[in-house]
Image (cartoon, rainbow, N blue to C red; front, side, top):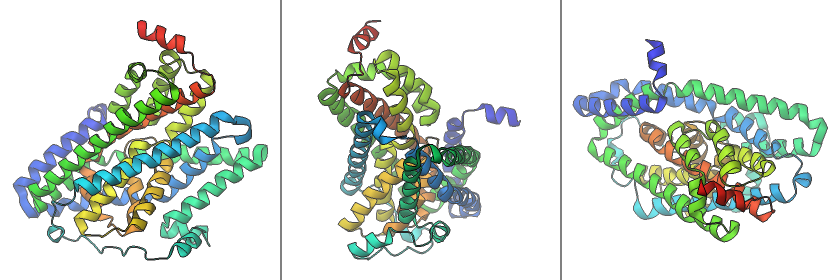
Length: 413
């Protein structure tokens, strides 16, 4: 029985659970809230992972850069492209969420036991800057205070880089910790079908078809945002910076796109992405190995876009008014959270717990979107993996490490 269950791909189990949950909820009605505790258990398990996962992943990701002076042009240009594309992706998600309002169709008064809406921060910009400094790292972790936690993690990573050889043992500890937390996350993700089933039954039974329509709209906007990133942003980078035809680029990463969509994991797709970059796109082994491996850890444009979109969704559902200062906070947090997100299925849900409280969006939003997150995660991962390859090709072209003849010959085969 267990062998049969685990032989079914997780995404198929999640889709089946989603459909069955909707059917049960529509049949059972408001009484479906009786099984919501299963979904709440799943969400609580996700919250448990937030602090250790973001801390180990961020420190490990920064330390993976190596000696910045030694890496020179390759590392610097890759990081600039990662940051710029990440910011564009976040603001795209915010723009889509603001204009098309995916959460406007849900009545928050119908949500039972929705919990208190955390008040948005009303600190002055000077106080916000001071608040970035963690007075006690332990207290910051205990309170899940995201911004000081991220700053502390980045400082630890930078300290490891500055320590050079002496910092390598510490870097290995964080690398191991990041891997362990990814494995723990995969264990928790096995609960996804049960959590999705219960949450979708609760959503469908309590909120009815209005909630299902709103969630379907959120899924559609997630795909729209990801497609705009891939088709418009990546194509422009490839055409005008890397100076190669975008159609050749996308033809070269077809295998990586297929694997990333089916697995929803940047890490699982990493070997295929490397092979596509080296054999089909003509990127040198040194550039592709560094840029794509680093990108699988910190370049999550699809996730960044979705965090902006999902935050707007939650704000609209619960009637939270966001200011421009909140938008800038979201843009920074979503970019940093995407950097700290593990390249495994479900990482986007975990990062929501970092972003939402900072702008007053209830964590109950996670329960609303968790049921359809896997469908969106597949497209977000495809966006992330395509971005890794796009940056690798661009950096290789800028540094003279791109074999365009091999690209042409690969296309002719």
